[in-house]
Figure 1 (cartoon, rainbow, N blue to C red):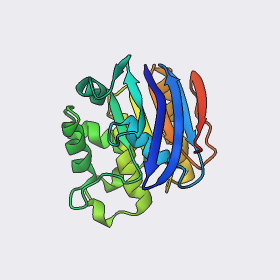
Figure 2: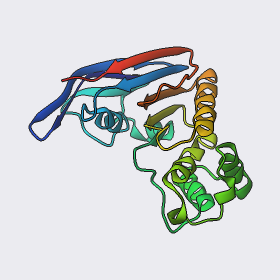
Figure 3: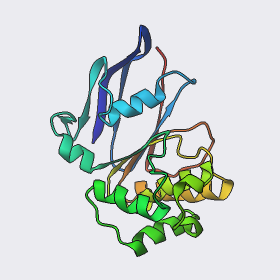
Figure 4: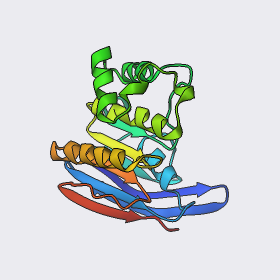
Length: 205
């Protein structure tokens, strides 16, 4: 359902990677690996349509994502290195506004339930600016209990999480793929995630 052909990335005059391609189908998990600076985050941004590749093309359901961007983005949930939260809003408000921007209506009870599942409900009504990095990360990840997107692209989702939260998130990812979803992640942590199929893509120039 998602495929890439011949992707290349330049940063300044430096070639980060070239000839990158893969196919990912329902129930599939793709690990993107590589040394720091190898372009992992840049590749994820390309797959989201946020960065134009120097060469190559990304396809969703056989169509270039730029040609069918509305349909593609409606099926995509992306969580990058930055949590994408508004510091002056509460955890609950951040989830609801994020869902609204994605075209979904989420009420207080639904947002609170997602925060509960990732173990951060006690902070639901606190402004995000007072939370620790680990707490902020859990608020950002709570969207994964709300989104209906088929494709999840996650950049270091386990960073700053405690052991219990890592286990909860890994279980949620496994559930997503059991239900026919797809996941692409970068991670430096050795976490067991159950998927119908698992692939590894290692970046090198």
